[in-house]
Image 1: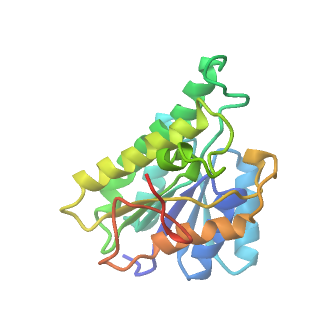
Image 2: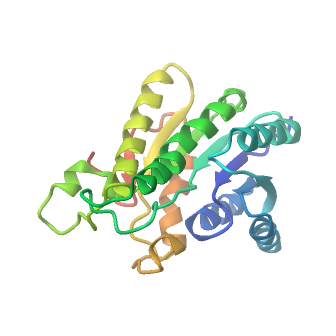
Length: 241
């Protein structure tokens, strides 16, 4: 079994996911580029390899059981284990999302990808993560999922959202529950807020670059064995729940 760190980043063909993959690749790690779109996935792998990363493609739709199972088999065959999982794939569900008028399909879409997808992928890959000496799971969340910030009066609440923001609150709570169940193992799992980055998700209205947003995920992916678990962090430290 190779001593190289084996990682998988979901939704890694562009934006923050791609930059996370690039950052982990720069550490000398082998990076699986998880993505649904074959052409975009292959292009991302080629670009990462051109930059010196050991990257490989992983066909992956986090909303599809068969796709996730196939991804787990690919990783099993390639390395026999997984050291780091970054659950980055996410959607807004579409806008607008005022609670009184929101299309319920938007809520279902956000939850299926941002929450159920994380459970589906994490559970399918846990057997491989358990084989790692220092397994790490990073769930890409958002400060809009912070109930403290949502109810503050300092302008940090973001737009009214009945799908995307609650899905990230759900993801934060889920992260805590995983940490509680896995507390007697060596698996560290944390939620990360990248900040308001300019990506396709928000029509590139963000004020931070995707590379800046990736930094916290890279930090949590490379935690020492005595690092935190069950927390919510951005580049400045702990994010309030």
